[in-house]
Image 1 (tube, rainbow, N blue to C red):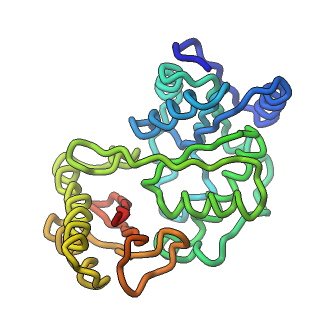
Image 2: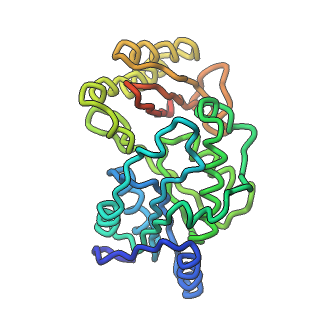
Image 3: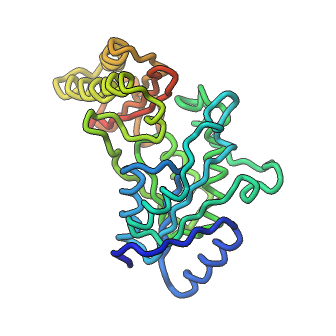
Length: 286
C-alpha cells in the first residue's frame, strides 16, 4: 500500500484497465475501486483514502454516465475537470484514474440493462424512472472492467448504495461493497458535486435539510414514533427555508420498504429542490 502521492496513471480504455487489473490480481494484489462522476469533493476523497488504506491498488473511476441521466436532466452541464480530479486522487494515494469517454463504455447503444423492479420505481426512482437501471448497469460494467476486491460508495446516495449492494449479492459479484458515512459541510449540508449549482443564498438555505433531519431524530428519541408527524417536521423546516419537497419517506434500512411505525431500524430518505438544484439526503434514526 502507498502512503505518498506519485504521478497517477490515467487509463481511458476499458480493455486496458481490465488487463491491468488481471495482472495485479495474478500477482496476488487486492484492488479497491471508487466509482465517481468526477467534480470530486472531500466525500469522494475520503473514499479514495479508505481504499488506499485497505487495498494494494486503488482505482478511481471518473465517468459522467449518460445512461443514468433522464431527459431534461443535467448531463450536459454536469461539472467535468479531469486533471484537477486526477491530482486530488493522486494526493489521496490512488494508483489509477479510469476516465473513459461514453464511446469507450458504450461503443454501441446499450441494450442490456440491470433492473431492480422492487426498488427502481420508488423514492428517487419515481422521479428519475431510468436512473437506477443506468446506475446498476454502469456499476456492473465497472466491476467487470476493474475487477475490484472492494468497491466504495458514499451513504449519501442511500438508495443507490442499497440497490448496488443487492445487485452484487444477487448476481454473485466477487466484490465487497463498502458504504462510507456522509461527509458534510460546516452547515450540515451533505457534500455533493451538485452543490456547485447553488447560489450562496440557496446554499445557506439548504442547511435546513440536515436541520430538519436532526430535529426529527431528536423528536423520535423523545418518544415520537408517528411517521406522518416526523415527516411533517422535516417538510416544515425545509419549506420554511424556501425549499420544495419532492419526497420524504421513512423506510426500513434493511430492505428500503416503507414503515408503518418508526423503529431503530428506520432511515429517513428525502429529496428536495432549492432553486433548480435537486438535493438528496438521509439519516438513520439510530
